[in-house]
Image (tube, rainbow, N blue to C red):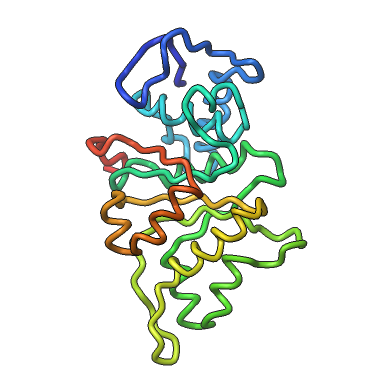
Length: 224
């Protein structure tokens, strides 16, 4: 099991004199819960890695709405999360198990961006509405984690080409400003690559919508 120690380790580190128990939570117990949930979902070989402790600590604090810890790490609780890192670092599995930390009203659905683009081919522009505005006053999921942003391609519907995820995210920005929803994202892309793929307008909106938390780009592929 991971433990939080009083140590400093570059930009993603837990700061000196960080306690394992904050004002509200014992994070060693939180880590144990996450590891148990991971083993339940992915099998007994699943484990949290010691090198990922600083990242998991920030993410757990965010989803538990631990204001003091988030403030110390400049994490805005009004924004969503963009989790970045190389292929195989564990972004998808981490965001999947973290779904079980928030209160019910803040829970989100994981959705592959590739699946969304395939749905767009079949159903057209209604898909953009479904994943952006949805039904404002229903109990269906409206908070999403769009998984692997950047792996999809522009799609055509009746000959009209559309950057589906860009349109969805721009629409969700309007509701984010109104305080009605949050958006979470995982991606392998850098900020420059995001701008090349989606344009400066969306990159600017994303800065307002999400907290950027990233795995070290040198982390090994955990699937090997």
